[in-house]
Length: 186
Image (cartoon, rainbow, N blue to C red):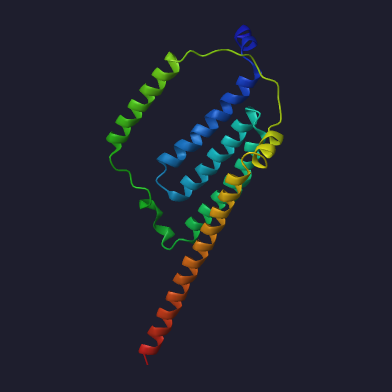
């Protein structure tokens, strides 16, 4: 047993538990019948992805994953779930139908991916030295990719403004409808 552990690199001993944690979180999202539990399993999946990015020396991606997905998207999903009407009826929120079809697709995909992994000519390049990626990403975003970066920012701004206009219109309609009901009834 000592000889086997001596042959395993320490990075692998860190990677495997983090990968197992991530896969367990993803399985919790897929198989939970309660939408609240699915949202918290999504939290475990996102945190596991942060750990995987950190293991791969992708420090910028780990920080962005933590801030955007865990800090923004997941909190938004949790607020949406918690503020939804009739949340007490969550037992039927994630119905399972066509399990046999899903199992068949799962078996096919696992077989295809296993065949791909076994038949691919993997090359061992050794361990790469740690190199920070933020400088390269910053130079790329402010250099040759400046125009697409700015266009993406403008599209996100337009989507945000459109969401505010749509939400405001729905609020105005509900207030108008509520005021109309009050006028009709004496």
